[in-house]
Image (cartoon, rainbow, N blue to C red):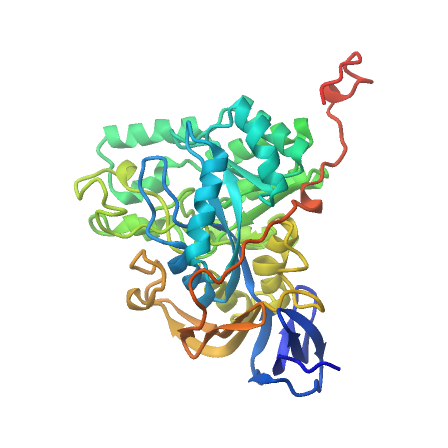
Length: 487
């Protein structure tokens, strides 16, 4: 029997279904054995008293991304994935951001160059379509999906990014034709624009009014319209960053009707409220993201939706902008909330703040933590079982958690380049002290052990989650539409 290259000894192994005491044996880049009393390895890590979990999969992060207004966010792939690694995440799915007039393929090539020179974790891409014109959908999307970029993203709001309903239907049909998942930022654009103008006109310009400018109703309205479009085309969708109880209820109803609707939320919606934006001067701008944080009652509704399976994923929506003229204050210090870039750093903090609540505080057990932060995103986006679990043959991506370690977030200790922590002053119990990527130690003793560019691109197919139901809407069924064939 060939010896193990690495044995993680004596910890409590947890997956999305089970938790048990075992050693984990690794050969090369993959898990070779999980059992008690494994033979000695060439190298060993003592995990007694610790939890041995799959590395986190963060399926929603904006890295080295140019905004529609021409502003580059604060992070490079090196800094962002370093932050992810310190927080126990070993796989990130970031965005390739097409803007109006751009070639999607050219943009994809550029992002590959960014990641190849900097990433220290493994990575994949969602492709943002801000300009889904006919030639992009017909000529660029098919080969890019075949090359392993099996998810498309669209926005239903933001002036320079939004698609209208007809464009949305075109993207849904393209995804169905090419076997890809569609991810959507779904809010009612007209309501947001109208409310924003009204607030500014009346002199309500501080960052806290950002939360008022996104009416609660704009989320369930957009969800309902999006789901109707997806059902017409018979295309599964992922709804990003659910923030309200009403939004979760719309998803619950649709899933109850058997539709393939997936949805995520983020730590900021589980732990923050709109009152976090109520700071002196422009200080609240650090907590400006879209959709905004809501009410404490929404937090409980979102936890319930996770428990029921209406929401399947907790992602970071990492979108870092420094609190200076290179980022949040790009338009100066005498600005309205409409002129402050939206976004909040979160790659490093995502897992620890969720672990603290779910595991340390006992809201759920450790298997649910693994399910929402690693296994489910890997399954939904076609990375499972290579990623997202600890099983024989899976990549040896492992985070060893010290459940007794207390850490207090501080601006001085952040690893990303936003320069501040939105969790400053918050103490969490439980932290990943050793992180392994494909059998190699990535983080130990508080230090990064990998070189920039050592992360690998994960070409992927969309998987079962993106397979249509086969439910033809009456308008697409030749038996009910007078024989028209519209496929």
